[in-house]
Figure 1 (cartoon, rainbow, N blue to C red):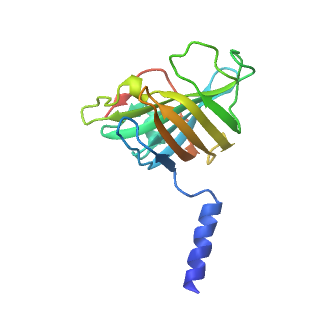
Figure 2 (cartoon, one colour):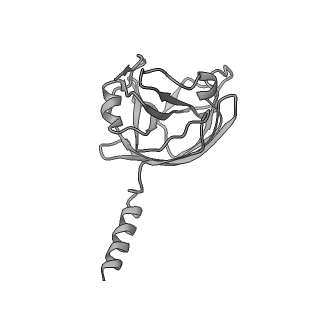
Figure 3 (cartoon, rainbow, N blue to C red):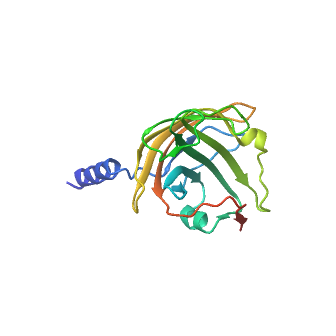
Length: 193
């Protein structure tokens, strides 16, 4: 009887989306990321939600850190800025939804597609230095598939990704099961603690 209860309990947890915060399969400039936490927060303007910031890290309590505009020493993370516009190159932003988003090189100045994402990888050492140079850390190409998204307390964003990072062309695949974080995102450099 006990094994069945264990199987049913495990099945219920998996069916409810409690399979962990995600995965990051591969390396960026020789660095791995073991995902211990994943959150997403909305970019907002006077009209409403205009984008999403998804972050996956080997740290803990990401929502608290995001709310405080803080990063932690000795951590590794991957971040995705996800946007959807009315049409390619349009300045009219729409709330991200379930769809495939194209990874765009942040240095590319051509108009992005209507559904796109900028992504980056960071490894911070004990002295708060970024270990991976920008040329190796920025996403170059690939896709991010958002399978579900709920902008509400206790909401989740789930999906998968297949991204080429840096000029060294490191391919990384994975998944995310990120919890909603109602943080006010800023463009200021975060504090490192």
